[in-house]
Image 1 (cartoon, rainbow, N blue to C red):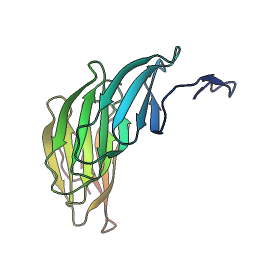
Image 2: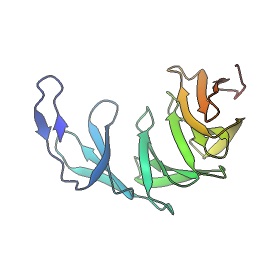
Image 3: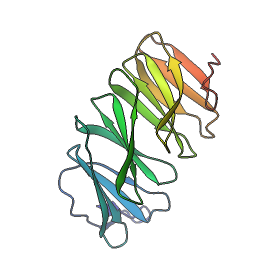
Length: 178
């Protein structure tokens, strides 16, 4: 269902069985739904028409999906060491973010929608440029990286590791502040 926030009424029912994740695009004109860790669909929020569908090619089904702030990319990840990046406009897989040696634990998208930070069980976080799927910076940790976050202006990245340490990094340079 798509709900009206002012009245609390359902304004649209999408025919997408087995939905495990959903989100609304910036501007509220489109909705995405993801089913069974294998496919995501983009829907017109006013009419309920399916605009596109993207199927994963990952070895493992994804368990989490996020969207870039621009609404141009969907990112899917799960039990393996890669993040799939899909271009919403073309309904095609743009690329994979690959270089972690163990599974991805968390992902955060920068406000510009062009960079992503990933945390992994391999004791690293990485900052990526989404277009081209280029790893920009590797951020080493003493334990596996359990959480990553990006400040609202993208200037800082915070990471937390299994050792209990919270680290703050310059978002553009990947340099440790504290």
